[in-house]
Image (cartoon, rainbow over all chains, first blue to last red):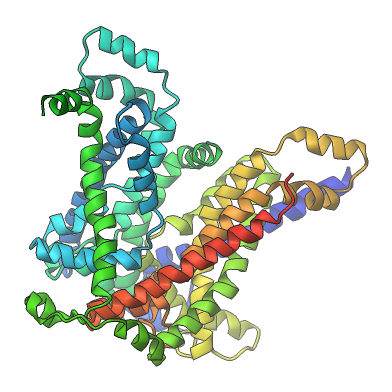
Length: 272
Length: 299
């Protein structure tokens, strides 16, 4: 019994030590974001600010345009939810309808997952340029609106819905769109939850495509704005840490609330 | 014609449902790969973009030149360096973390799941900002911690070899979480009866780990290895935001080379050729992985 207790202690200590190592950057970011600028050059550096200040956060919105960046990021988040519904609609059709080309088109969708981003990056830019959509929100949002992985997950989950249920609704005279929104969406809530959170995280963090597309600061997202801040205020660590914390903390809060769903979601997708 | 309309009416809903997603995927995934293939045989650049009549076919020139480009060759070497060190580290640490988290069921173990997963969902620019500060050679925490042990300050991001390792450290930290979840899901799928049978036979903890857990994780290990491998061959965001490929291209990866040529130098055709070299390497490595996997013993 004593051996078991020692083992448990060792494992717990390892767990906590590993966790602390993973947490260092987060802890350092949050405590530093409340430090006034002169404490950043102090040797030795201190973990907690000697003089607590909110100035860095205030500066993000008064000296810099973080309000604009936040607005753009939220617009992208909104469109990612629209994309989520398009994925779900397609997944539903692939799962529950018989039509010529169903299998072939689904394989085509899956095949797009294997194309590396670096190959499509340049031609997509050229295409958007030809459409005259560079430096517009449409140009930023459209290329990533739908995704093969999302369609795949929805299809897998929706194929477990009994067809009789759908047939019964049809006999009752419900239209196809009504069936989708009133019957299918409520049944598949768990997948929507997982996909919704992943869509939120992805959109909130979106960086590369807005960086390529947006020439105008009016279209910058939080991460592009933060990149700009890193370049222009390279030695202004307080501002940088506050900007980083402003990006990271909301994601951590959202994730902590829904983490059970996300982890279950991976289990679902892994098992089927 | 009437037949066609009749057929269309019958299937109009499924086609309407898949149409938006399919049109977008066609436009932004399938058609681009054809465009990429075509332009990789041309000299398209900014002048060509302004007026398509300036574009000329150049045959295989781009592909020949890319293999003569010292920066590209260096980026291939660097990418190999990233993959060889990074991938095994990610697989082992993710498996280790999953085993640790699967050991207990208390609140502590549940909370630390979130802690280990957090870096995976953190924005890359925020990561770069914070790690850039940690790596700072004057005021950074890492050099300060080294000084406790009397080790002199390091040029984390300015020394050619150390800079590569610094980026690997950051990328490993960031990719443990997601892969750990995959291992955790697999661990929870192992039937308890296997362990009970082994206990009756008097197997020790280590034996159970080595002869039951690890072999039964072989599918998850394969999955994690192959996805991590493909991901690391495309190693991109970390050098882009941390070092921009410097110092002296020593952290330049193949993906960053393609990005730089495409979007900084506007050599679209040349960059497209480079991207096909990268694509080809990914395909070869993936096929090789599956070939090795086939020889594995099935459990």
